[in-house]
Amino acid sequence: MKVTLKIKRFNPEVDKKPHWESYTVDVEPTDRVLDALHEVKWSIDGTLALRRSCAHGICGSDAMRINGRNMLACKALVKDVAKDGVITVEPILGLPVVKDLIVDMAPFFAHYRAIMPYLVNNDPPPERERLQSPEDRARYDDTTKCILCACCTTSCPSFWARGEYVGPAAIVQAHRFIFDSRDQAAEERLRILSEPDGVWRCRTVFNCTEACPRGIQVTKAIGEVKEALRTGVIR
Amino acid sequence: MTTTTLTQGRTVRTIQPLQGKARFERAMWLFMRYSGLALVFLALSHFWVQHLLIGTHAITTAQTVVFWGAQGQPITLGNVLFRLYYAVMLVLAVGHGINGVRQVAYDYFGHRPAIYKGLMAVVTTIAALISLGGLVALALGAQASSEVAMR
Image 1 (cartoon, rainbow over the protein chains, first blue to last red):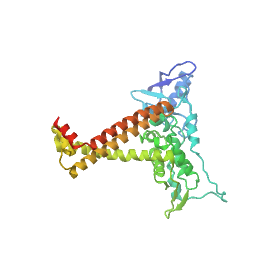
Image 2: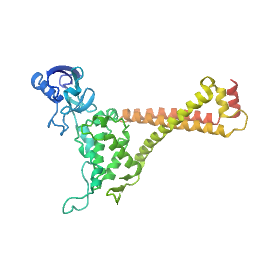
Image 3: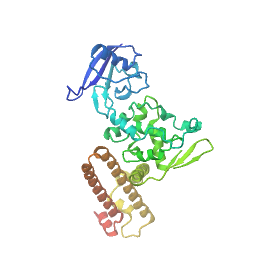
Image 4: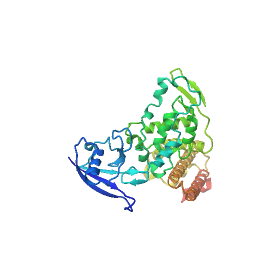
């Protein structure tokens, strides 16, 4: 089938502001948007810049705004997103555009690092692993699925308005460790998230949950962090 | 942080109470939830009283003064409840609105302290004036209310 890709292009060395360019490619309906973008880059216009790595929905590199919704280009099928044979593709919002579909992820990862995304346990290491009950493990199972693609954070209106907001992805990562019974830094993380640019900036819009390519209940996780801050109890 | 293990295999931990700005932000977040919920019922009740009990075409200043209860007659319990009802609605609505503006102002101007502080000063002044108006309405004396009713 013929599909027209309408891509938002921006080259900081040439352009003063972004502009749209259209490319028509021949693809199978079951091809992914990433395949269509490859066709453009490899056969029509080699100057198109995009980021991708594993191309199988695991690395999270190819997050982009397709038809106005954040998704991974490697998980979006052409037949599902093409509207009257047209697919619009643009970079994710809220982060500085480096070139075309590539954004600068540095501010995103700065927020990620701020919430201490690693297990903290100052007890002497046991002979084997640090054990926990199946119930305790299940508590944070959903938030272990995050691949840091930034689909959630860059779909959040609060983040668009204020880039200092830690954003849904960082809160999801914090949730993963706060509710881990083996971790000993939950209180510190909750203090970071209780700051004005922390979890209270979430307005429960649910864009993040809708955008997550891993199906994580992001808004629910944020709600659970709020609940821990409200009650002072991590359960 | 203290740790307690539940019998169902789930661990429960408690944290120290929040302090300072963090505590204030949490209080404001809770206030927005509770006041928003309360305002839904208060506003619907307001419409019910004004448009169904009194009647859309019978809403006049004189009618309001009768409900307000300050025409030289002893104030009844109904009058007191009517005043309290509108005082609560006023406080919650103004508080909810001002805090909402504070949030939006912080979103867009939080990184520019001068603009943010200036905006908040204007908003606070407006809130103070509205509250003052509410206080006047609550404490509306017999003579003043009669004069209003006469007009």
